Length: 186
Image 1 (cartoon, rainbow, N blue to C red):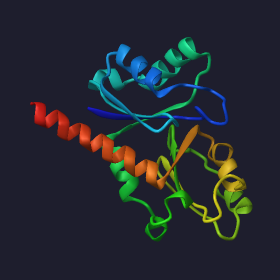
Image 2 (image 1 turned 90 degrees about the vertical axis):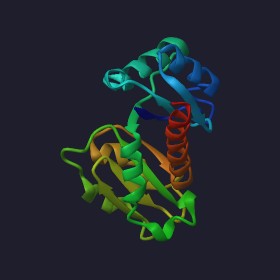
Image 3 (image 1 turned 180 degrees about the vertical axis):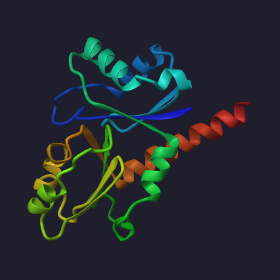
């Protein structure tokens, strides 16, 4: 099966450094196939067996901790989950400005999300929508100083990692290419 691993808070402002070539090697040593990464923020696409995928986020986290001394949150998605996340975007009019539209991928669907807390801190220009294990955030002024963006995990009660629209679409494209490559080799 095609899998997508998204790491939280790697290679940001000189903290939690994980060169992508190291990440590729680490995943390869775990027996994962056709590993590819996109930009330095910890996005990987690979193939894994159904049984390998079980518990994979914790295994990847532990391996990174052993090799690099920190344990980033790892959100694992299937190709279908990523396709659904992209197709379910509630703000298609924001797509032409991909840095203003973010998808926060959640480790689990929140059991008791405090959306009212997010509503209280959002700027008038910001919008958000929770759909299953994805929180969509449209922040035309950017997310760097967004109180809404800073409070996602606390308000939802689950670990999250966000990608802007361009990155999410590129990772999906890479995952789809992996399917084409696999089919061509068959």
